[in-house]
Image (cartoon, rainbow, N blue to C red; front, side):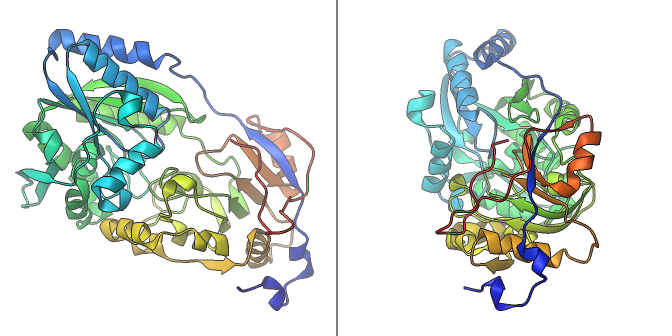
Amino acid sequence: MFDVDQVRLAGSEHRLPRMLPVRQRFAAGSVPDVQTALADQVAAHDRANPLSGKRIAVAVGSRGVARIDEVTAELVAALVARGAKPFVVPAMGSHGGGTADGQRQVLADYGVTEESVRAPVVSSMDTVVIAHLPDGTPVHFDAEAAAADGVVVVNRVKPHTDFKGEHESGLAKMLAIGLGKHEGATTLHSHGFGAFPHLIPAAAQAALDNAPVEFGVAVVENAYEDIAELELVPAQGMLEREAELLVRAKQLLPRLLFPRIDVLVVDEIGKDISGAGMDPNITGRAPVTGDGFADVAISQIVVLGLTERTHGNACGLGIADVTTQRCLDGIDFGSFYTNSLTSGVAVSAKIPMALADDRQAIIAALHMARGTGRAPRVVRMRNTLSLIELEVSEALADEVADHPDLSATGPPVHWDFDAATGRLLPAAAG
């Protein structure tokens, strides 16, 4: 494997800057009692729309949703309490390698199993076409869900990683793409992300008009990876309400409080972190377009590895400038390429410069960010969901001291690598 010591780099790049542990502060607020919140809202819905005796498909599957196992279990319990007969269906488009077993495993990794939610998990890639859009595009819908008496979609409402619109990631996308399974997701992605601002709500409305959608459960998260709001959204008016919740979600979105960064070191990326592996709403780098994403200038991004829960899907790795051999060794190219082929975004599947170990990858990035005439501005994060606790180079110390939402939590420290493997040891969790 290539070793940076094989080339002559500026000597200063081999001396990594000391790093200052830093805490970022954001708006908080959470829903501590998920059970009561869901039980009360489902009971109110039941009074107007009786659920007793109905076989209800609970559609789950979006990555990284805070406490999704708890939300799903309590939702199932609330439905059972009203006399319904719930079962869970994976709603994740082509994820899990585009297979029924793969999608069942993804749910299990989220803690959503038949044992944990006390309801059957029915995983199938079969769909039915429930409508055609005006241009002739078929709208696919999970066959098991379509045959149920009612469908409940559960998803986090948040900014999308590839496009901007009134509806991005949320209930509409779950109806249009998640429940469309592999075939439906591929069909809609064939239009390109430029069409999504109108295509997603159009397909979702077709699902609302032609499938037995009962209601949605919208999760809005705060910057601390917890539930800020949990709302039952009726089928009627769902698209309008979701657009309002997206505005709220964007207000709560965490961000990097440093507008200029020479090197951003990301410990891990993965589909459980973001649809783009690492969220462009944080990094400012989008696989398709940079318009409307984070206003942060980053010269070099280093990705050190993959999360365990991404199961080798390195989607988004192509956005990085430098990576490691261990990251490449962890890739399952079947899952990786299936995702990229479905989305039609080739850049997400590209391989950046790969170095032998973590230390050398960081040195290479610092070398390529050289020429600034000042000490390097370096930020290290665990992943783009973990933005509370960071490490920053001493060159950013004055900005930390001057910012009301930044504070140093300890003295500067040297980088800590495993002597045998060259692997960077874990930083404080965010």
